[in-house]
Image 1 (cartoon, rainbow, N blue to C red):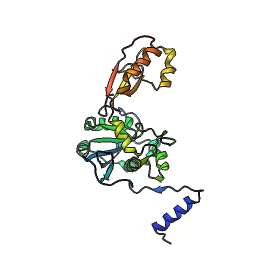
Image 2: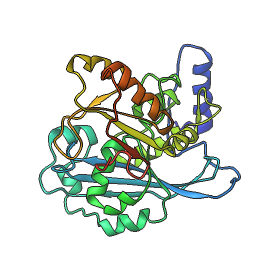
Image 3: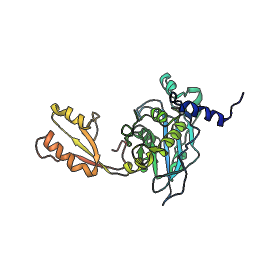
Image 4: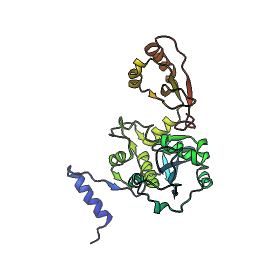
Length: 298
């Protein structure tokens, strides 16, 4: 017996109205898009990558997901375009762990190639690249196609305060469940569409959408402040304030650091002077915009 979509939806509502069930709908495509544009209309791209591991120096991309969308000056998502979805064979075999996570096997990617020039052409008109973990995706994307380095990026995971909005976690699966849907996770283009669905929906406590909040945050200039040679016994004070440790050798010091809004720069230096160094200090700082944020250059 075939049951119509309308009848299935009626059943789902009946279950929900009982107060004893919560029903997740399958995501077939973003539902909260459209409307009349206000001001200039721009193109964005949601990006998601599946890779053979976590290190862009040694691991490789095995799946590209790029979904274009348009948005207006007010941050309303107006339309979603055809995805760019490609598999790519890496130099070595895919590990069982990555296959379990992504569902991708050596047989699926055998002989598959992604041309960096094709990717560059696809993103050429984008005014913004969005990823749900941009600190991961941007490094892989720029190593594969240098054109990504010239685009501003935003992170829908790190640049929205999901906990304040009432979500237990900012992970995509948790957010999807919170917004009442499920999708085929850990496949690149499906994750992109899920991200767009979440961003185009109302964000609790803001009076707007997640994408509007993300845009406002991404457009801000931040300042990275280094607490170089801070007293070891005060490391817990720095950590509690939100400082992170950089232990990698390179041009940046091996030290605690924090990213703050440009408007909060002087207040943060005052904190370091009074609570950490117990005297005037002129720490190493660096301005960071959406063009550098989440990249190796930040």
